[in-house]
Each structure stands twice: as structure tokens, then as C-alpha cells.
Length: 84
Image (tube, rainbow, N blue to C red; front, top):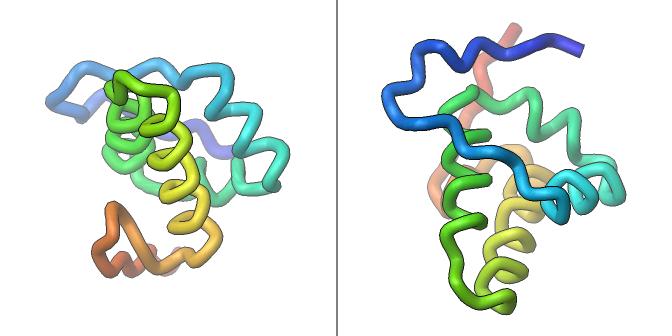
């Protein structure tokens, strides 16, 4: 597994909540999550974690999982992964 460099983030790094990690592992999308740039990983977990209501957290988590599975979306915007 490649370790991503978060040192260039201009915002504080958001810790991943346990329920997000479990969802990524259970859906088999952890590698798709880790393949995203560090700013996207950080944005996703911060966005989910800032939701006050559990229903909103679940809705945001579902959106992230959908976008990771689709592979070409990020926060409802088109996303083209860099070719390696």
C-alpha cells in the first residue's frame, strides 16, 4: 500500500472516524479511497465528520461511497484520476 504525503495540505488533517473506515473496508472501497489525492481524502472525512446529525453523516458517507465506486466523481463534480 502506498503511503500518501499529506505534508502539503494547507488545512488541518481530519482524522478518519471509525465508522467511515469500517464502511470503506466492508464495501471494498478502501483502496479506491487511498488512491484519491490527499486533499480529497481529507475533504471527504472532514465533510462527513462535520455533520451534526447521524442522518446527515450517513447521507454524506453514502455519497462518498457512491463516488468512489463510480470512480469519476468527487463531491458531485466530474473527476479524472491521474493515470499512473
